[in-house]
Amino acid sequence: AQSVSQHNHHVILSEAASLELGCNYSYGGTVNLFWYVQYPGQHLQLLLKYFSGDPLVKGIKGFEAEFIKSKFSFNLRKPSVQWSDTAEYFCAARTGNQFYFGTGTSLTVIP
Amino acid sequence: DSGVTQTPKHLITATGQRVTLRCSPRSGDLSVYWYQQSLDQGLQFLIQYYNGEERAKGNILERFSAQQFPDLHSELNLSSLELGDSALYFCASSVGTGTEAFFGQGTRLTVV
Image (cartoon, rainbow over all chains, first blue to last red; front, side, top):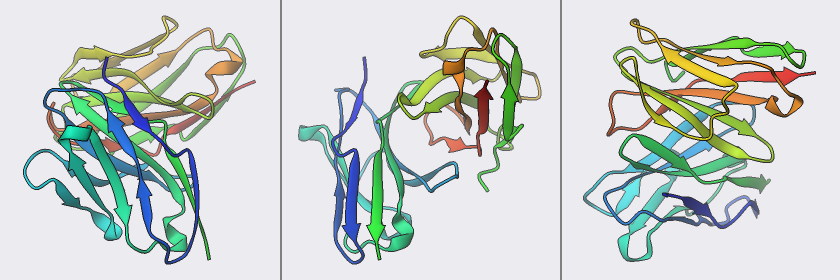
């Protein structure tokens, strides 16, 4: 079965630090990849998505992700985080009808 | 605002009871997904409907059921509730089977 793994459960960074959150998926066929963000008390919102084409995907709020097919990875990056980026981040993969979500990474940014 | 509406926002009920959670997808979206989010289990996929038909089933208990109506809104029915069913229940919708999903605000269910 398809699965999505997020390596970091909790990340604490100071403002202006760079961020990289790891995500690996297990499916070897065609897969759509997503990163969602959940701010405290809110619903999940789409940060960025990859369907095909350029493996470097830019999303909202300065986030980007790189799809590396050979490594089954879709890591999320941001060069300089802000306090407002404090949230839970979910990587997701879609194959066919189903979305598979990782367990999430909690990011805390310290001012 | 994602355009996906869930009601109610909060629900407190006793063990053994039955509740119904409602979801209205974004206009034009045919697919509806239900997820359960709890602290210990993370985000768990429950079930998906597409244009009224069940398309995929995840970790949904037999005590839980769902349906999608002709107007495309969906309901998740939870019965014989247990304390462990306390969680945030999200509904998401998408246009079809190859697009991203948009999430509602969720229904926080507390079973006491």
